[in-house]
Amino acid sequence: MAEKVKRLGIMGGTFDPIHYGHLVTAEAARGVYALDQVLFIPSGVPPHKDAASITDAEHRYTMTVLATLTNPHFEASRVDIDRTGTTYTIDTLKSLNEEFGETVSLYFITGADAIMEIVSWKEPQALLDLAEFIAATRPGFALEDHAAWIDEWFAHHGKSLNVLQVPAMAISSTDIRRRVTEGSSVRYLVPETVEFYIRKNRLYRSNHRNS
Ligand code: ATP
Ligand code: MG
Image 1 (cartoon, rainbow, N blue to C red):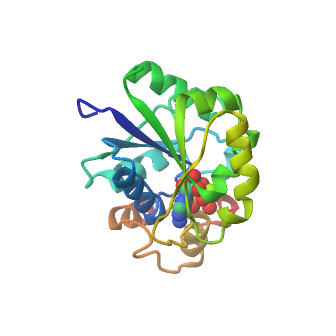
Image 2 (image 1 turned 120 degrees about the horizontal axis):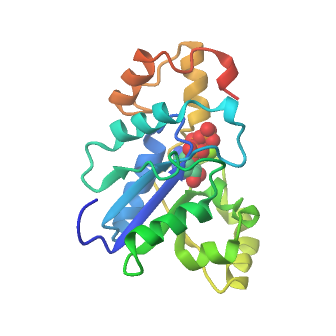
């Protein structure tokens, strides 16, 4: 972690695998919110996904390291995969807050689909008190359709949601897994290093991990 980090972006996800949609979103947030660094945090077992259906955490972490290598402002973090049990964002934010202290402002970056689920997340008020929330536009998930209730929900907690426009990237990990299983190309959807890593480790070859 670089010294003098004052504004820290956090990009959480399953990253199964990490793709250009994640990277473009994080880079856009870095620019707009003047973030010193963005931490990419692969989840342990996410509450909404079944452990057996996601790829081993070490593979997901290694792909995250490979994908973030060339950006000096990006870094991969093991904070969630090294904690046992289900990954809840509140625990991640508390760990980071303890690690970095009060002087560092946390910015939690999500896509439009993930932010709509925030109402069901654990300890919402504590979450919102620990970080600013940024919702990035994502093709297929129209944030505008939900703007009224989500704005009201944030206002109810004394906060507001930051909406970030990112260049449209209709890419998802689900689609990438499907392509690999079917033998289609994932070139230009993921960094080349991630593409090679998937091939070398024969990830996503069979259907059972691709739900
Ligand atoms: P899956 O299809 O397995 O759910 P995913 O592509 O949605 O994978 P996740 O690891 O679930 O990737 O997402 C991590 C975070 O990145 C979420 O907040 C999600 O909304 C956001 N995100 C993922 N893809 C994009 C994209 N193409 N544009 C904007 N945000 C994205
Ligand atoms: Mg997702």
